[in-house]
Image 1: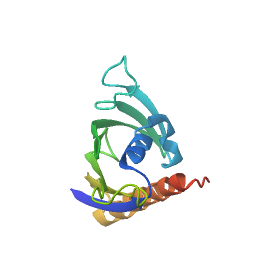
Image 2: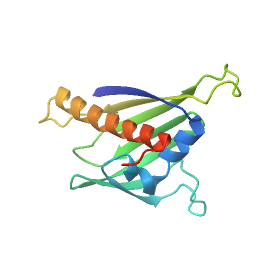
Image 3: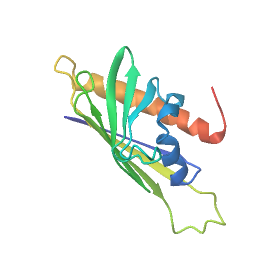
Length: 152
């Protein structure tokens, strides 16, 4: 099992980052993939995300991503499917400094992504780590540009 961690700072509130990352059909703004919501935990309420499942299509492959937990400062997900994304799970934390008076400084959120996954038997761990880090880093960069108002 390999572990990957990346961090990034955003000049917005944690709720803004979380809300943006939980908009399934708009995640293609940040990731080179298409996302479609397959199931919500409560079929009557599309805003409920805990237990929701999205179909992800990328690089000619399809797999499902399930949100395990989404709270005020934490999102946990897992990838369901076979190779090349088997045994992939992620925990995303949203830290903010609550000790600074909000009127004196703009909100600041540190996004910390922690990913665990198993590399396919035919691929060395360092290759998987390189490509996953690059992919997540690019997505975080696009997320930062989104909050700054820049669009590609």
